[in-house]
Image (tube, rainbow, N blue to C red):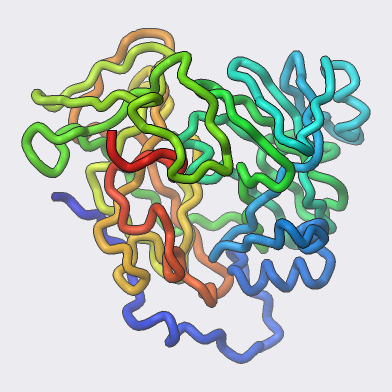
Length: 365
């Protein structure tokens, strides 16, 4: 087994007490305790307004909650400078769907859903959104937009206004309700200063001879209830894959769950994001959900040996993927402070993971 080693601070979680404030605002990704302060101070609204869905703050991100309705769109869009989402959406909306009692979001459709959270950011903090791990593993494509937005998943410094999530189920229809959490948002103070980049390669051999090396989603499967944890039979949605010769042919527009060859460890004072590498390496996309929190894969948080699970979609033509081929990269950047809670320290479905489906599916096929 190959392990990619990153700088790691040894010790127990209790040792990571925050230093006394110096009045100097450090640059980097904000930790859990600073996000909680933004909520308490009103820079993030809506997260504490719903008693049924209290804020879910991760070591380096905040989960985003769906609102009460969804708009079925005929096309995705960005509002552009000086335009609000509500001004532009009227030209592409087809009809509105009430989510109050749950509603099915169909594959092949694009929906825009107002989020419960709104922002009133300080002038030195930007927001960065991404699908949650379970969302990516369900092949649900999500992106966040805001008023005046010129980029998906990027909320400019000083932004004040509502947030919206574009949701497009690709393989499985989903049952969604208000308060469901499909995405998450990080907050960065100051400029983006990557520390290092590490390539991630694919594992097509597994831990033992004849092991399952991945899963391919079955087309025309049943509904996935977003709140149905461990409630769906994996065999009805997935077929196991084997690669006795260390190669796998990706079929165009098919969806796969595969694992990294390397074990991944995120230092407690850093955060990472999975990003694409040069497109000329092959006709596929190798990630949907990209945030890795401090402590993922770290021994101190019970994660030694954790692998990155990759959501892979073939494009255009069949493509032969080989064992050990680089398919994505991890971009590391500093935290502004060490979070007071590390990833997995209080339990996580994905800490210490190998090849694993989303938490909606029973573990065995």
